[in-house]
Length: 463
Image (cartoon, rainbow, N blue to C red):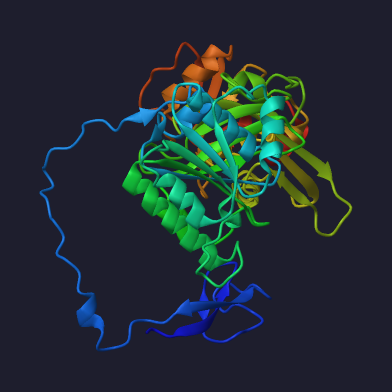
């Protein structure tokens, strides 16, 4: 018999230590080492009795299905992010802040599929069956033929999945942090329990061709709680983002073995649940004040979807020795770089001012193409001159002040023209298709500053 041994596992990063410590040596977190009992390795001399069988190997050029069959939910934004629908036998993990709408979204998904004849099972480890029914009734989905259960035992869930008499096509596990395997001596939510529970459910799902949707809790840093290996085990990882003070929610794909990554779906939280937003650009710009200084429109790209958002900047005099730099929806390090280039290459002075930057609508932008729009908003706020109301901006800024090309400018220009914009300030284009817009190509950030120099004495004095 293999003996059991005691080890200490970090609940933040999954690192394993043979002795307890107050601080994890791997990630630096304090008071995160939890005692867990694991089974020791097979003793020497027993390996001969555990000999496996040789694998059946096939050629790379063998015949296979040309197209992976998918289950489309009919919720266009969800299908877009998953690559066209759910694949049989796949595992999908969705994470997000508490109360952001993860359970609501998945309940709408399973109800949509159940109404199409797919047998769907919703297993909740956090709510009773009556509580799930209350939510379904509020969303107007009470008549959908979804089967409910309140359970946390992986053994019972696996038995349901392996029932050949009444096969399951899709199962929701809400959430994976509440599940436990009874032969693992640790509490639910620990690294070992999360890893073992997910591994066992995914194994049966692959064997039976069942699509599994996991809900994952997140840490205070926004990462999915539990071991990082959990994201490697599943086929698709989605993050549900948004500020609860705004009604907009962003479903973002960060991993997808069956489709493109970095796709987003936009939803609006309403009384009847999450409603798709077919034209997010028009929605994000609906409350824009075009005559306000410090407001620029970015023609961005999220995955394959062009999206226009408003970049707001406020430059205000500061009485403090260390002026404030507050950023919402963008990378603060990227803002520091743009400010440094504006000061070093263009001669503008921001060092004595408080700077506030906001991406309106609660969306987060990560692509470098936003650099030029941010710079334009900063210069506009510093000068007090509003930008042209019909203009859009995109382009990456280099440390020498050069404006670098970005991907798919034609798609961005087409989206801007569709919403009524007439002018674009962009880097040099390889293709000259402008979609009927007036395009101003600039090579250096200094060219952007010169546009304001004729109107503002503060900018003209340093240009």
